[in-house]
Length: 265
Image (cartoon, rainbow, N blue to C red; front, side, top):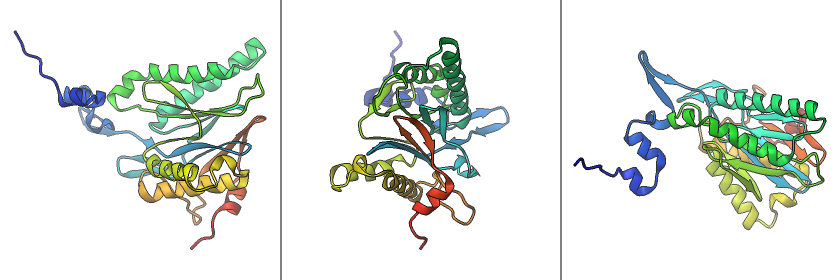
């Protein structure tokens, strides 16, 4: 009788380690080997969302990388799906943009055909469904997307909510904040400190203070993560920042971001 060995990944509970040990996952989860060599795919980071006094701030840097190479410094990662919904993307832009397009068309089709907007719960579940349908690409490591979804229910009077997902489509509501991307550990640590120990948690801040904080968080992430783009005044590269309130989504202009930036050293 053949003996089936137990891989180290199975012992540790690491699902992706099991797949990699059996050659079912591409190396490092970032590239696929073809007949002509290795194919690197673009990836993007870092995005975040957190509650402030009047709503939610959603922000993202602009850098897209391919391996160790910066291929674009003006990528759009904070995407307005409709006037009540924003999806911030971290992962493979090709997959994320396709998911965003499907969501935009689906939400608009429902609104026009049913003469009412899709509910908040339905929108949240639809994002999870699209991520689950992307499972084959996720397991191959060539199309992983970990979004942060921020939205307000157009049918009710509730406050905006933040949801984050895992790569398989499971959804979780964030009470205070959600961060995704390779630069997320640094930003998450700062947010955790501010919430617990600073005496001035983000949820109590004004809109201008919250926007300034988002810029600072992305700058901190850029300092510790080469895949996260910082603020470049010379070439006028600034993060994307959107505000979600009960009335809907509003984009923060470049002029307002410049005014809220800390003085250059």
